[in-house]
Image: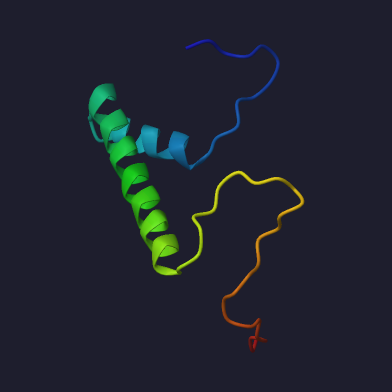
Length: 79
C-alpha cells in the first residue's frame, strides 16, 4: 500500500472494520470476503425495498429528473 506524503488518509467505516478484522486475526482475504458479503446483503435489501414500492429502481439520473420523497411527513421530536 502506498501512503500519501504530507496528507492523512481519511478513515471511513470500511477502514475501521478492516482494522477490527485484522485485530481479530482474520486473514486479509477473509476480511475482504466479509466486507463484500456485508455490502452484498445491504444492496440486495435496498433493491428489494425499492422493488416493493412499485416505482422504478433509483440509479444515476439527470439533474432534471428529481426524486420525490414519499415517506412519512416530518415531525417534531421532544427534546
